Image (cartoon, rainbow, N blue to C red; front, side, top):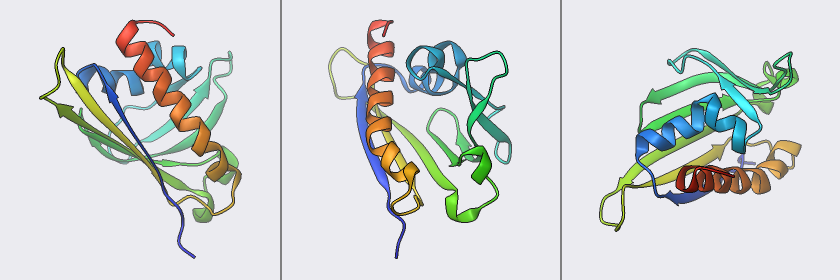
Length: 147
């Protein structure tokens, strides 16, 4: 049985650089994701998706597989307890493409692909509603400056 993918495409009235920062920099992710992303974003580096609590508790962990700033970022994705179980590790890719022909630009097409999901898992179920909500929050924040 093949592992399912989740793909979400969004158009954001912001430059690729602004969207890249919105995905990775704590001053943005705190506002719409209620978490921070911790990494140096170099290929092979680890990354953590941490809560805003004092302990900075990680909810998701992984490795940076690709980092082509500001075009593409690919990460492995797992709950900390599952990080060493290949069956439970999935992959998330963020692809950013400029959309030049739209008025009042700049615009960016953000394609999020969450692949290698374990069929029937809690992770597969949660990404189907979680990613659209988060990416809508990112769009709102970047386009209006608030959530």
